[in-house]
Image (cartoon, rainbow, N blue to C red; front, side, top):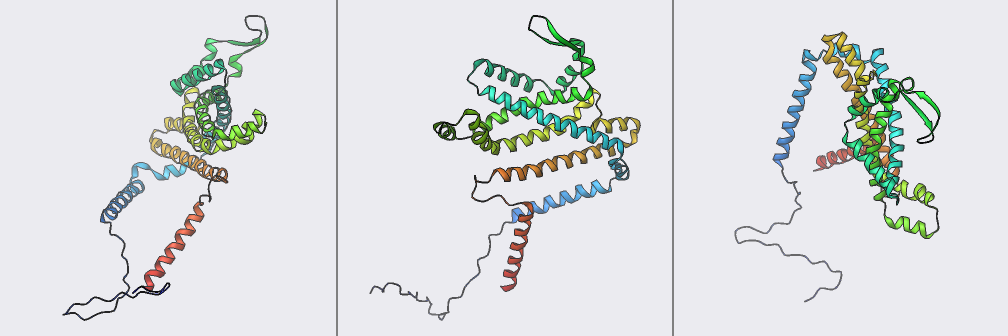
Length: 326
Protein backbone atom coordinates (compact mmCIF):
# COMPACT_ATOMS: atom_id res chain seq x y z
CA UNK A 1 0.00 0.00 0.00
CA UNK A 2 1.45 3.39 -0.93
CA UNK A 3 2.11 5.93 1.80
CA UNK A 4 0.46 9.36 1.73
CA UNK A 5 2.68 12.32 0.81
CA UNK A 6 4.70 13.63 3.72
CA UNK A 7 4.40 10.43 5.79
CA UNK A 8 7.47 9.06 7.62
CA UNK A 9 8.50 5.54 6.71
CA UNK A 10 9.99 3.48 9.58
CA UNK A 11 12.33 0.70 8.49
CA UNK A 12 11.92 -2.57 10.41
CA UNK A 13 14.81 -3.71 12.55
CA UNK A 14 16.48 -6.95 11.51
CA UNK A 15 17.13 -9.63 14.10
CA UNK A 16 18.35 -13.17 14.12
CA UNK A 17 16.99 -16.13 16.01
CA UNK A 18 19.84 -16.03 18.56
CA UNK A 19 20.04 -12.22 18.96
CA UNK A 20 17.07 -10.14 20.02
CA UNK A 21 16.11 -6.98 18.26
CA UNK A 22 18.16 -3.88 19.34
CA UNK A 23 17.27 -0.24 18.83
CA UNK A 24 19.29 1.67 16.23
CA UNK A 25 21.82 4.07 17.78
CA UNK A 26 23.73 6.95 16.18
CA UNK A 27 27.33 6.13 15.48
CA UNK A 28 30.15 8.64 15.15
CA UNK A 29 31.91 8.75 11.78
CA UNK A 30 35.64 8.42 12.36
CA UNK A 31 38.07 10.16 9.99
CA UNK A 32 40.23 8.05 7.72
CA UNK A 33 43.55 7.22 9.32
CA UNK A 34 46.58 8.39 7.37
CA UNK A 35 49.71 6.95 9.06
CA UNK A 36 51.96 7.93 6.16
CA UNK A 37 51.17 11.62 6.62
CA UNK A 38 51.89 11.47 10.35
CA UNK A 39 55.18 9.65 9.77
CA UNK A 40 56.28 12.18 7.14
CA UNK A 41 55.31 15.05 9.46
CA UNK A 42 57.30 13.54 12.33
CA UNK A 43 60.37 13.04 10.12
CA UNK A 44 60.23 16.64 8.85
CA UNK A 45 59.83 18.02 12.38
CA UNK A 46 62.83 16.00 13.58
CA UNK A 47 64.97 17.26 10.69
CA UNK A 48 63.90 20.87 11.29
CA UNK A 49 64.63 20.54 15.01
CA UNK A 50 68.10 19.12 14.28
CA UNK A 51 68.83 21.93 11.82
CA UNK A 52 67.75 24.64 14.26
CA UNK A 53 69.70 22.99 17.10
CA UNK A 54 72.85 22.87 14.98
CA UNK A 55 72.35 26.44 13.82
CA UNK A 56 72.08 27.69 17.39
CA UNK A 57 74.68 25.57 19.13
CA UNK A 58 77.42 25.34 16.48
CA UNK A 59 80.23 27.72 17.56
CA UNK A 60 81.38 28.05 13.95
CA UNK A 61 78.55 30.56 13.28
CA UNK A 62 79.79 32.94 16.02
CA UNK A 63 76.41 34.46 16.81
CA UNK A 64 78.00 36.92 19.23
CA UNK A 65 79.97 38.42 16.34
CA UNK A 66 76.82 38.34 14.21
CA UNK A 67 75.09 40.51 16.81
CA UNK A 68 78.07 42.86 16.81
CA UNK A 69 78.04 43.36 13.02
CA UNK A 70 74.29 43.29 12.35
CA UNK A 71 73.63 47.00 12.98
CA UNK A 72 77.10 48.46 12.56
CA UNK A 73 77.19 51.80 10.68
CA UNK A 74 79.19 50.36 7.79
CA UNK A 75 76.57 47.61 7.29
CA UNK A 76 73.68 50.08 7.54
CA UNK A 77 75.36 52.41 5.04
CA UNK A 78 75.66 49.52 2.60
CA UNK A 79 72.03 48.60 3.24
CA UNK A 80 70.97 52.16 2.42
CA UNK A 81 72.87 52.03 -0.88
CA UNK A 82 71.20 48.70 -1.68
CA UNK A 83 67.78 50.24 -1.07
CA UNK A 84 68.58 53.29 -3.21
CA UNK A 85 69.88 51.23 -6.13
CA UNK A 86 66.89 48.87 -5.90
CA UNK A 87 64.34 51.71 -5.79
CA UNK A 88 65.80 53.63 -8.73
CA UNK A 89 66.33 50.52 -10.83
CA UNK A 90 62.85 49.15 -10.09
CA UNK A 91 61.10 52.36 -11.17
CA UNK A 92 63.26 52.92 -14.26
CA UNK A 93 63.16 49.25 -15.19
CA UNK A 94 59.36 49.11 -14.95
CA UNK A 95 58.94 52.29 -17.01
CA UNK A 96 61.35 50.95 -19.61
CA UNK A 97 59.54 47.62 -19.60
CA UNK A 98 56.20 49.31 -20.27
CA UNK A 99 57.68 51.23 -23.21
CA UNK A 100 59.29 48.09 -24.62
CA UNK A 101 56.08 46.07 -24.19
CA UNK A 102 54.01 48.71 -26.00
CA UNK A 103 56.62 48.81 -28.77
CA UNK A 104 56.49 45.01 -29.00
CA UNK A 105 52.69 45.15 -29.36
CA UNK A 106 52.84 48.04 -31.84
CA UNK A 107 51.81 47.67 -35.47
CA UNK A 108 55.11 49.24 -36.55
CA UNK A 109 57.54 46.53 -37.70
CA UNK A 110 60.50 48.74 -36.80
CA UNK A 111 59.36 49.20 -33.20
CA UNK A 112 58.60 45.51 -32.86
CA UNK A 113 62.01 44.54 -34.24
CA UNK A 114 63.91 46.98 -32.03
CA UNK A 115 61.99 45.92 -28.92
CA UNK A 116 62.48 42.22 -29.63
CA UNK A 117 66.20 42.71 -30.29
CA UNK A 118 66.67 44.65 -27.05
CA UNK A 119 64.87 42.04 -24.96
CA UNK A 120 66.75 39.22 -26.67
CA UNK A 121 70.15 40.85 -26.16
CA UNK A 122 69.73 41.96 -22.55
CA UNK A 123 68.27 38.64 -21.46
CA UNK A 124 71.19 36.82 -23.09
CA UNK A 125 74.04 38.90 -21.64
CA UNK A 126 74.87 38.23 -17.95
CA UNK A 127 74.20 41.17 -15.65
CA UNK A 128 77.77 41.30 -14.39
CA UNK A 129 79.01 41.68 -17.99
CA UNK A 130 76.61 44.60 -18.54
CA UNK A 131 77.83 46.31 -15.38
CA UNK A 132 81.51 45.87 -16.23
CA UNK A 133 80.97 47.14 -19.79
CA UNK A 134 79.21 50.24 -18.49
CA UNK A 135 81.90 50.74 -15.87
CA UNK A 136 84.52 50.82 -18.66
CA UNK A 137 82.31 52.73 -21.06
CA UNK A 138 84.56 55.78 -20.90
CA UNK A 139 87.34 53.74 -22.50
CA UNK A 140 85.12 53.25 -25.55
CA UNK A 141 83.59 56.74 -25.71
CA UNK A 142 85.48 59.44 -23.86
CA UNK A 143 82.92 62.13 -24.72
CA UNK A 144 79.24 62.06 -25.56
CA UNK A 145 77.55 64.71 -27.68
CA UNK A 146 74.03 65.74 -28.66
CA UNK A 147 73.37 67.15 -32.10
CA UNK A 148 72.31 66.37 -35.65
CA UNK A 149 73.05 62.77 -36.72
CA UNK A 150 76.14 62.69 -38.94
CA UNK A 151 76.32 66.47 -38.49
CA UNK A 152 77.48 69.12 -36.04
CA UNK A 153 77.06 68.61 -32.30
CA UNK A 154 75.20 71.16 -30.19
CA UNK A 155 77.07 70.32 -26.99
CA UNK A 156 79.21 67.52 -25.59
CA UNK A 157 80.24 66.37 -22.14
CA UNK A 158 82.82 64.14 -20.51
CA UNK A 159 81.26 60.73 -19.86
CA UNK A 160 83.69 59.84 -17.08
CA UNK A 161 82.52 62.79 -14.94
CA UNK A 162 78.84 61.87 -15.16
CA UNK A 163 79.17 58.10 -14.88
CA UNK A 164 79.64 57.78 -11.13
CA UNK A 165 79.53 54.38 -9.45
CA UNK A 166 75.90 54.91 -8.44
CA UNK A 167 74.89 55.99 -11.96
CA UNK A 168 76.63 53.00 -13.55
CA UNK A 169 74.95 50.60 -11.13
CA UNK A 170 71.47 52.08 -11.60
CA UNK A 171 71.74 52.24 -15.40
CA UNK A 172 73.08 48.69 -15.67
CA UNK A 173 70.41 47.21 -13.41
CA UNK A 174 67.66 49.28 -15.07
CA UNK A 175 68.64 48.15 -18.56
CA UNK A 176 68.66 44.53 -17.46
CA UNK A 177 65.42 44.87 -15.51
CA UNK A 178 63.60 46.57 -18.39
CA UNK A 179 64.18 43.54 -20.64
CA UNK A 180 62.49 41.18 -18.18
CA UNK A 181 59.80 43.67 -17.17
CA UNK A 182 58.86 44.09 -20.84
CA UNK A 183 57.87 40.43 -21.10
CA UNK A 184 56.00 40.59 -17.80
CA UNK A 185 54.02 43.64 -18.90
CA UNK A 186 53.39 42.23 -22.37
CA UNK A 187 52.06 38.98 -20.90
CA UNK A 188 49.78 40.93 -18.56
CA UNK A 189 48.36 43.03 -21.38
CA UNK A 190 47.74 39.95 -23.53
CA UNK A 191 45.91 38.30 -20.63
CA UNK A 192 43.14 40.93 -20.75
CA UNK A 193 40.07 39.73 -22.61
CA UNK A 194 39.97 41.12 -26.13
CA UNK A 195 36.28 41.85 -25.69
CA UNK A 196 37.14 44.58 -23.17
CA UNK A 197 39.04 46.52 -25.81
CA UNK A 198 36.38 45.90 -28.44
CA UNK A 199 33.68 47.22 -26.13
CA UNK A 200 35.75 50.30 -25.32
CA UNK A 201 36.40 50.89 -29.02
CA UNK A 202 32.68 50.53 -29.75
CA UNK A 203 32.01 53.34 -27.26
CA UNK A 204 34.44 55.58 -29.13
CA UNK A 205 36.97 55.85 -26.29
CA UNK A 206 40.46 57.04 -27.25
CA UNK A 207 43.25 54.47 -27.37
CA UNK A 208 45.17 56.12 -24.55
CA UNK A 209 42.08 56.12 -22.33
CA UNK A 210 41.42 52.46 -23.13
CA UNK A 211 44.93 51.54 -22.05
CA UNK A 212 45.04 53.68 -18.88
CA UNK A 213 41.55 53.01 -17.53
CA UNK A 214 40.54 49.61 -18.91
CA UNK A 215 43.40 47.44 -20.14
CA UNK A 216 46.27 48.28 -17.78
CA UNK A 217 44.30 48.08 -14.47
CA UNK A 218 43.11 44.59 -15.42
CA UNK A 219 46.56 43.60 -16.61
CA UNK A 220 48.02 44.57 -13.23
CA UNK A 221 46.43 41.49 -11.65
CA UNK A 222 48.75 39.38 -13.80
CA UNK A 223 51.70 41.78 -13.83
CA UNK A 224 52.12 42.31 -10.09
CA UNK A 225 52.93 38.71 -8.98
CA UNK A 226 55.41 38.23 -11.81
CA UNK A 227 57.04 41.61 -11.42
CA UNK A 228 57.43 41.16 -7.67
CA UNK A 229 59.46 38.05 -8.46
CA UNK A 230 61.61 40.26 -10.68
CA UNK A 231 61.87 42.83 -7.88
CA UNK A 232 63.08 40.18 -5.44
CA UNK A 233 65.64 39.10 -8.00
CA UNK A 234 66.64 42.75 -8.40
CA UNK A 235 67.23 43.09 -4.65
CA UNK A 236 69.59 40.13 -4.75
CA UNK A 237 71.12 41.32 -8.03
CA UNK A 238 72.31 44.51 -6.36
CA UNK A 239 75.06 42.43 -4.77
CA UNK A 240 76.85 42.55 -8.14
CA UNK A 241 77.37 46.32 -7.97
CA UNK A 242 80.30 45.54 -5.70
CA UNK A 243 82.22 44.77 -8.89
CA UNK A 244 81.78 48.38 -10.08
CA UNK A 245 83.27 49.74 -6.83
CA UNK A 246 79.93 50.54 -5.18
CA UNK A 247 79.86 49.36 -1.57
CA UNK A 248 76.33 48.10 -1.12
CA UNK A 249 75.25 45.66 1.61
CA UNK A 250 77.23 42.75 0.20
CA UNK A 251 80.18 44.98 -0.72
CA UNK A 252 80.39 46.39 2.80
CA UNK A 253 80.33 42.91 4.31
CA UNK A 254 82.96 41.73 1.80
CA UNK A 255 85.21 44.66 2.67
CA UNK A 256 84.86 44.02 6.41
CA UNK A 257 85.54 40.34 5.80
CA UNK A 258 88.84 41.23 4.15
CA UNK A 259 89.79 43.35 7.16
CA UNK A 260 88.54 40.81 9.73
CA UNK A 261 89.09 37.35 8.18
CA UNK A 262 87.84 35.58 11.30
CA UNK A 263 84.41 37.19 10.94
CA UNK A 264 83.64 36.12 7.36
CA UNK A 265 80.91 33.65 8.36
CA UNK A 266 79.11 36.05 10.75
CA UNK A 267 79.26 38.79 8.10
CA UNK A 268 77.75 36.48 5.48
CA UNK A 269 75.00 35.59 7.94
CA UNK A 270 74.37 39.30 8.51
CA UNK A 271 73.95 39.81 4.76
CA UNK A 272 71.69 36.75 4.57
CA UNK A 273 69.39 37.97 7.33
CA UNK A 274 69.12 41.47 5.84
CA UNK A 275 68.24 40.06 2.42
CA UNK A 276 65.64 37.81 4.06
CA UNK A 277 64.12 40.85 5.77
CA UNK A 278 64.01 42.88 2.55
CA UNK A 279 62.44 40.11 0.47
CA UNK A 280 59.93 39.35 3.24
CA UNK A 281 58.80 42.97 3.32
CA UNK A 282 58.38 42.95 -0.46
CA UNK A 283 56.34 39.73 -0.23
CA UNK A 284 54.00 41.27 2.36
CA UNK A 285 53.48 44.34 0.19
CA UNK A 286 52.83 42.05 -2.79
CA UNK A 287 50.07 40.23 -0.88
CA UNK A 288 48.16 43.41 -0.04
CA UNK A 289 48.61 44.92 -3.51
CA UNK A 290 47.31 41.71 -5.10
CA UNK A 291 44.41 41.74 -2.65
CA UNK A 292 43.61 45.32 -3.62
CA UNK A 293 43.49 44.58 -7.35
CA UNK A 294 41.50 41.39 -6.77
CA UNK A 295 38.43 43.46 -5.90
CA UNK A 296 35.74 42.93 -8.49
CA UNK A 297 37.54 39.94 -10.00
CA UNK A 298 36.73 37.39 -7.26
CA UNK A 299 33.62 36.74 -5.21
CA UNK A 300 35.50 37.20 -1.94
CA UNK A 301 38.88 38.70 -1.19
CA UNK A 302 41.62 36.34 0.03
CA UNK A 303 41.90 36.44 3.83
CA UNK A 304 44.77 38.30 5.44
CA UNK A 305 47.21 36.39 7.69
CA UNK A 306 45.45 37.82 10.77
CA UNK A 307 42.08 36.66 9.45
CA UNK A 308 43.53 33.20 8.74
CA UNK A 309 44.84 33.05 12.33
CA UNK A 310 41.46 34.02 13.77
CA UNK A 311 39.68 31.45 11.61
CA UNK A 312 42.14 28.75 12.63
CA UNK A 313 41.67 29.52 16.33
CA UNK A 314 37.89 29.51 15.96
CA UNK A 315 37.95 26.14 14.18
CA UNK A 316 40.28 24.76 16.84
CA UNK A 317 37.96 25.86 19.66
CA UNK A 318 34.95 24.38 17.90
CA UNK A 319 36.79 21.09 17.41
CA UNK A 320 37.83 20.97 21.08
CA UNK A 321 34.23 21.62 22.19
CA UNK A 322 32.98 18.89 19.85
CA UNK A 323 35.53 16.43 21.23
CA UNK A 324 34.56 17.31 24.79
CA UNK A 325 30.86 16.88 24.05
CA UNK A 326 31.40 13.41 22.63
